[in-house]
Image 1 (cartoon, rainbow, N blue to C red):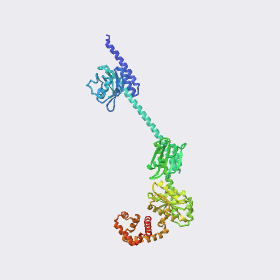
Image 2: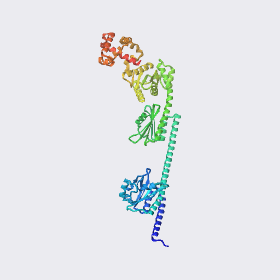
Image 3: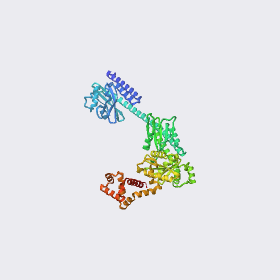
Image 4: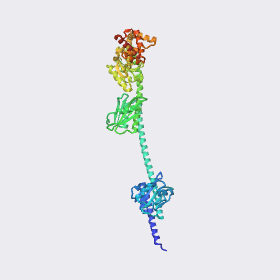
Length: 583
């Protein structure tokens, strides 16, 4: 029995569809990139089912269906379509895991509508819509849509054909996603391996630098070797500064880069760590401080044409630490020498001429000619102990072929200098820069090797200076010669007689009656005899002041206001006050 024409036509059409389906499925398996797979799916689906346009949307983490690829669309805005979870034909497909269609999308009430998506449907002209699920196992990962711009139903064969194609497409899409994830994981592994390789190289280099720096300490190297090692490993130019800011070593790779950026060194000193900055020519300057606790010992400055890496900065800091160890080692040796120097200093300051042969021999062993030591320098600070100042003076002493240390609680230096004023000024400037705070320095000539007397005068001048408003100065004792009565032991009896003649009766009365006549008279002269200001300064009533002045007159006599007598009184009162402060 022969087949009917309709059945034969149907069979031939089905064979063509199945052949096209299998050919399409084979072509999908050859693709690897996700974007290429998406474009191929909508293109092949469009050719397979023959609708006006097709598009594919994937389910996002929030359940939204977002259009990823399309074929045959005419509106650019439609390609940005996104449908919230649970709405439209796509929402039904996801909820049921089965195909769904409508003959007229905008008019149907069978599915919930999204106003935004409906607004995109109109310019695209979409009417009939079929959606089939893209299934991976039991999970719907997306929906493949076929749409026409005229109202019509979708035949069972069309739904089955697109569903079968979607099954193949889902496998191809999932394979592409797995391939993409694998390739991404491989790239991450490769990147991680490169990072590990780099870190190993960096660690090995850092270890090599550290070992080389440690050898410098063990072999007794110095700043020159540290600078050379840094340049070998970091390139650029390295400058080493001591605590005074003086350059102690430099080393450059190939040719010097340029002048040092001392402002970066100062910034690192303020922070106590490292600092980096660029100059106008694009050179990078990095500085690290050399410290021992809170004590600043110097700095390392690295200049490079490229921005320093974190490893460069860590290496610079490590080198600064090694430099600190070297300085501490040198300091320990210097302190031992300083103790010997200080011991000899004390012997010279308390000895009487002539100096013995043993002392001259000990001084000569240190390169010091005792006969040339003609200036005594005393330094005092309100913020640093005498021991600290003594160490700093000791570090400078070789420049003047001298001896330095601490004696009777004061930092002192015996030096050979032709200009005591210039010596005092130089030492003051250096100590001021090192300490960062006020310091008083007094230099005095030692006559006939009488270093003890010169030390006493210089020390008492230091004590006197704050009373005269000089809290941060380097000077000789000469500007304070008029006050010699105060601190020259040989003139002590003269001062005692002068004060007794002028003030003995007032002092005795104050001691006996517990009054303040001496203080009242000092304040009276300090305010030029103005009664109102004097009473205000003493915080007493004017009548009380008048009674005190009457008592003064009864003790000193009516001529105490006479010019000559008043001048002697003022000088005596001033000397008495200053003597009290420096005693």
